[in-house]
Structures are given as C-alpha cells and as structure tokens.
Length: 483
Image (cartoon, rainbow, N blue to C red):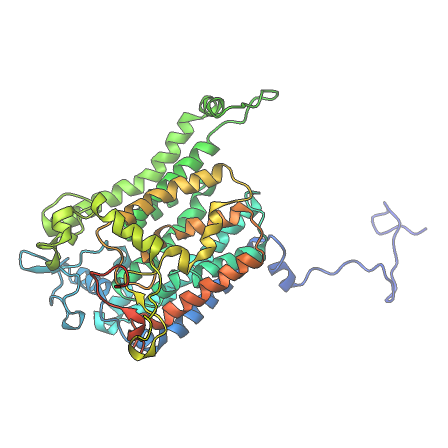
C-alpha cells in the first residue's frame, strides 16, 4: 500500500473512468437557488417585484406612465421645499381643478401627510418642475415593493415555524395581495390619494419584516414614523411590535416548572418571567424615531397653520370644509360609522331594473363609494376560521383593529373608489393571518382567489378610464341603488 505525500494514510489513485471522483463544486446557479438560502429568498422577492411592476405598468397604460397625473400634489409639495417654502409658489395648478388644496391666510398648501413628497424630492429636482415629473410612473415603480417584502415576511414566518405554508404558496399569497385586493386598482392610479396608499403599503411590509421577533426596534420605529407621515392610521401597527417585544423579552421557564393551565395563570407566569429592562430598551428604540418625526410634524404644522400639533396636517383648511360634515362632526367620529360600515360590508354591484339598461350597455354599475371588502377579496373570509391559532394571531388582530376602526370612523368613505381603498391600511395583516391560519388552499380557496383577481383586474382596467364611465354610479349622496 502506498502512502500519500504526508505519509499518514493510503493514497488513492483514480483513473479517468473511476466512479469515485471527488464531487465537483456546486454550480453557481445552484448556490443562488439553494433551498431556504437568503439569496433564493431575495431572488424570488425580486421576481415578484418585477412581475408586479411590469403588469401594473401595462394596466396603467401610456397616459399614466408618460405624463404627470392631474392630481400631482406631492410633486408640488416637493417643488415648494426645493424653493425653501411650504406653500405652493404658483398656487394650485389649474389642471387640478382646486381639488383638495388647503387655503390659509391667502396661501395654498398641501394638506396630505408629506412623506411621499420626500421620496419624490430628488426626482422632482432632477425634472425641473412638477409637470416634468411623471408621478404616476413613479408610483408604479414603487408598487412592487409591498408585495415583494410581504413574501419575505411570509418566508420569515415559515423559517421560524409559525407558518406551515410552502415557499410557492407564500409567493402566491404575495401575488394575490398585489392582484386580488384593491391594491391593484389603487397602484395604477398614481394620483395623490392613491400614491399615499402605495407608499404606506411598502412601509407597512418593511415594518412587519422588522417587527417580527422585535428584531430591529430602531428601524421599525423609523418605518412607523414614516407611516405616520404617509397614512396616519397605520401607526397603530406599533402595537404589533410591542406585543412581539413582550414575547421575546420573557425569559424561558425554569426546567421542570409546571405549565400554567388557566389563562389567568399564564398571564401571571408571563409577567413573572418578563425582562422589564430589556422590554423598556426595545420600546425606547422603537419610540425615539416617532418622537423626533412627531416634533418635525408639529413644527411644520405650526409654521403653516400656527398649530403646534403633529396631527393638524391642514384638512380643516380645505375650501369645501366650511359648512360641511367635517365642520359639523369632526374628522373622526361615531357619526360616520354606520355609513362606512355599510360601504365596507354591503357595497354590491347595481343591477339594471327589469326592462332597463345602464348607459353604454353596461351589465352592472359600481357605486363609487366602493364594493364591499369581502366581495372584491373573498379569500379574506378564511381569516375567520383558522385551522390553528395562537399568540401571533392575537398580536396581528389586536394591531389591525385600531387601523380598521380609524378608517370606519373617518369622515370619508373613500369616495371615489372601486373598492374599499382604506383597507390598504390593514389588508396585509389579513393576508398574513390567512397564511398562518393553516387552512388548506383547496378548490374553494382557489375559486375565491380567481374571483378576487378577476374583479380587481376589472377595477384596475376601468376605474377613472375613458369609455367605462357607464359602469360606475357617480352620485356621492347615494349609498345604495335607488328603487
């Protein structure tokens, strides 16, 4: 027996035809696609982003992709900042028909929370004017971020054992959020009201990824602060981080200790195991960006309207407010709940009466207060009967309910809309609840998904488009079809 050069073990000779060749290093492609690898997750997320953007751009069409929208308020706000001011230097543009511009002491302001304008700022500067900046195209480019990051959220839940869904199902759920919810028609509009939803969805997805296991408190807090300055109701998602922080800050039970049986005993046991100092540190890091941005918001509002409040963005100075419901009942209130719940739960297509017809030969009409949430996305009903549930279900539900309550108590139904656009503030929570609920994605679920995609495709193609006006009912004062 021959020894190898080191003399410590037999040398092995291999012929060219030997079946015992040393394995070749894995191909570069296989390393990129290795199951459960970080690279694979990012590649799938990138593919979801690209698919969503390409299809949304195709549906948006050249009118939205090659020119600015008529309601490019955020671009005008960015332009004002570039000129060292908060009011619009040329006033409200004529093409915007004075729609939702705040007036105060002879100056014109944008009353929408301003973070989307922060994102647009460098591109508006490069374009030279708001009219040269294609805000609708910018929103489409952003539209793939939320679904792509949602996939990463669902994969994180799978890797940590809190979801039994496969990678392919998680990718399907992310795409279902993009194409099977009102996010679809929202993202292809590009105008100020809908742009805020697209930015808000992206921020919410990133926040959820950071908040799971309370891993990145400061970055999660920064996301929350940006959410406040985009879609204020979504800031209540901070409850989810707090509940996750409580869970991870509980010390492991002592070996051999009895498992509490009643709910009261479990709460007492959890309180006794809670590392209070660690929890306070987590919450302090979460809250610091919120405090800083809240002060900035209060300063901006004081400089514009003389009100040191982080919440007074200026809606009370919109011209239509005088003598309106907002002046009579406030921005939020019980007065609005019944009407908003009616839209959220009972909005259905209008059918033509016997012997009648709708303009242009439309088969049905959609009231522009919007179709019911369960009608446009019936797969959300699977949230109601999960196969399994636990702490994560409770944390997600407790976090989404305040955002839902805020939109239901708001002075506006969301008009004008195809479906309940305010559901963009919390529907990502519903998708996650469907994922962790564990119900099989059988034939009935697939049928609900197909229904959702079909209806939301219809909304994306027809809403606010020429040639489809007859498919929509436009009387703002009417909620249900007249007899």
